[in-house]
Image (cartoon, rainbow, N blue to C red; front, side, top):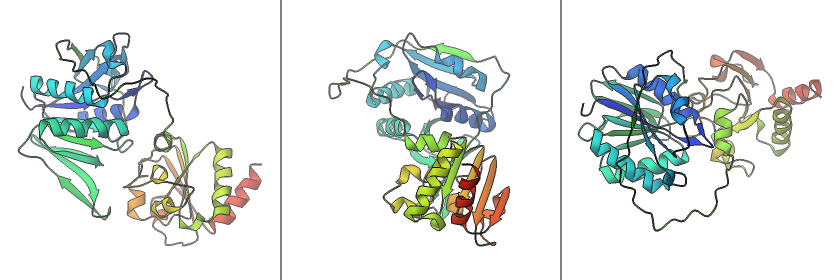
Length: 322
């Protein structure tokens, strides 16, 4: 059926399907109405990654298996997706707002001459129209963006804004496509592949996070917070102003223009709680807020709060867990 399916382009590293793919399948199932949720999976002949996807309930997995995909550049994946799009004509196509997802989606958008909304925080359908919701104007408002005249409607979605949920469905259809044209990329040669740990992904996927605000911006206090994070097995994140410090970058930022996180435990130190920050922490299981202002907005969403100096709190906690 033309323009009726929601496609999620699967992302995987080291034979592991990335969490954002599972999150997108769950969200697509929640909003699909009369549409089908289809995952597009590129893998080598030795891989069987579809087994990691079935439990999340996609209606179909379109699998392209070819050993040339082992070191495939993003330009090749975009070209293969273009061929699949012309063959099946989906309604919409979703990517994780990751380095790879942003790279492939932008290349594909240029090929298909359709729209692409980046870094969405929410999605919904009005009939066949995909409403793509994202922050704009300096993260001060949320915009609803649509692409009513071109298909597929395309969007990248930030990791961890949705929660992945397994289902009991075992009715997933597996479709193997083996008639695509692999175009050789003469501009790129891969000599070696070395996996790197992304700081942004570490924050996004961490079970424990300590977030620093202006009240903990001094070098001495950052060092103490780092020691506390190490003792608690937590990752260190910051609000927007602290990304200007030498110790941090945008990879460490939490919030609308940074990473959305969903840890089991989040401790905020000296964070006031502006909406640009709190939008990125709503999926946290437990939030412990420390701020010397009893009227700070962070206390409105915190599960536990301590009104007092964040620096003194850190020093006391370090003494307790020595």
